[in-house]
Image (cartoon, rainbow, N blue to C red; front, top):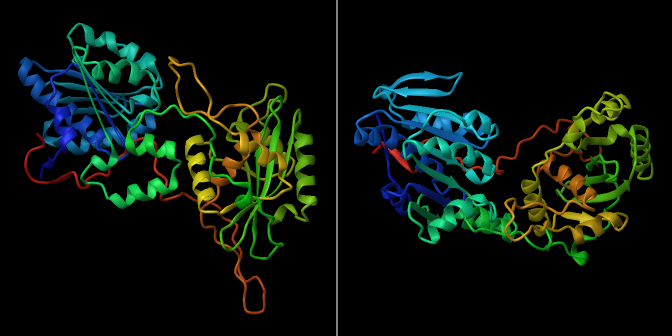
Length: 455
């Protein structure tokens, strides 16, 4: 059976528009990608009928994994199989039985986008691509007077805002845009939106769910309160689990944090170290001192977490800092360096009063009080949400720690005699509630049902 597409109000307005350059700005799960997919099918079929010739189009995603995991499967899911004449998986090119061609490309290599004239191009999550992608693709539309549409969640006042959204708002010829919230999608569970509102910082919720263009100004962790979050950890208990997180630097200081989680899933930052110009031996000594002054042995640490950039090879030694520390006997694992996801998770734990910082961690408290968004020039093309990169070394280690441990770690169990009867060493985990910044619509879902036509 062929799937039937039931567009909501904003999707329908988008499809009915005759503007040459269209922009669909929406919150997460707003149905942006499905609308872009259906429009691509319309141009490959109905537009070809209008022109009385096959069309050539291109679908662009920010990265190859996004293209492979989202856009290609979604297109194949919605394109009736009997209309596909050929599909080249290696070159990511498709030919339909009517002769129309669709090429799938990622925006992380703009040079690969150069080529013959195009009748249409769709850039999905365009705000996660550089302006150069559009600058390379645009000339390919010139000869045929080709069309372009963008679907994206906003990322500040970037090139998409300046080049597509603002001209539409100013009612320039050939431009039209729609901006709507996640809640405007009638097929979305409103409880999921309420949960996101609780979990995300106010500015991130406005951007990701209200589709608001945000400047990201001020403190990153305004929810931190000394009276609430500065608290000494309870005495060591057999059910506690311990973590060490490390951010490697040189001119920027190397920073490390020792933390523990109790059986109630409270995370305590116990101790810290921050120092410039530390080589491998210096880092190893600091790590040993960190454990020693807290009465811990290496085998008692459930996870040693490190900046993933530490796996890069150093010119002086020919080895990565990661490998050098392994040789020193420190079993580090690469941390998760998704900055925005890390900030959101820390924010949620602060609000839930699940993170506490010892008075011993004076530098960490100093950094969290001053950690703020980077300021950009008013008309900067790189107006993105980024923390100010100075004096934030412990904040980086803090993020690796929070992102690389699960919300609910399995703790050692004790019997009625107070003896530990089980232990947990495996920290492999993937948070089922964490969503990618990219809009991924579940296949099937509420927007589609069996029967009828896709158009």
